[in-house]
Structure formats: C-alpha cells, structure tokens
Length: 94
Image: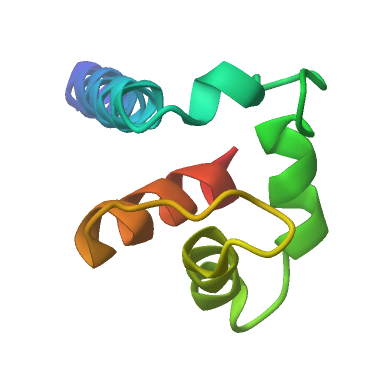
C-alpha cells in the first residue's frame, strides 16, 4: 500500500511538471518571456511577483486576462481567450 501511495505521488508530480512545462512553452510562444522571467524582474516584473500580487483575489484570473487584452499598462496580447486563461492560471500557480 505504501508503495502505491508513493507511486501515485510521483505520477502526480510528473504530470504537474508536464503541465507547467506546457504552460511555460505557451508563455514563450506568446512572447511573455521576452519581457518577463518566472522568478526575477526583467523588463517587466517577474511572473512570481505578478502571481503574489493577485493571490487571494476572487477575480484574479479574469483581472490578468483583462490586463493582457486591454493594452494599457501592458502591450495588448492578441492570443485566444483560452490561451490567455491558460496563461493566467499558470501565472497564478507560480
């Protein structure tokens, strides 16, 4: 039983790493990582800092998507709504 639990935890970790890699690849494809790094300030703030800013807010995902689409304090992003939702969820998971 103990080995089954360990295997399940390991499989979950591997799957989550794959999802994180896929979302990071999407961020790179969309150009996010040209100005942002995950854990430090580049031209723009680090994505972990953005995540911390929005943590605990009910509308965090929608607020990030709106900011990316608006083009006010951030260049407007011309991605699909699904991709923007994926990116905002990934950012909030950091």
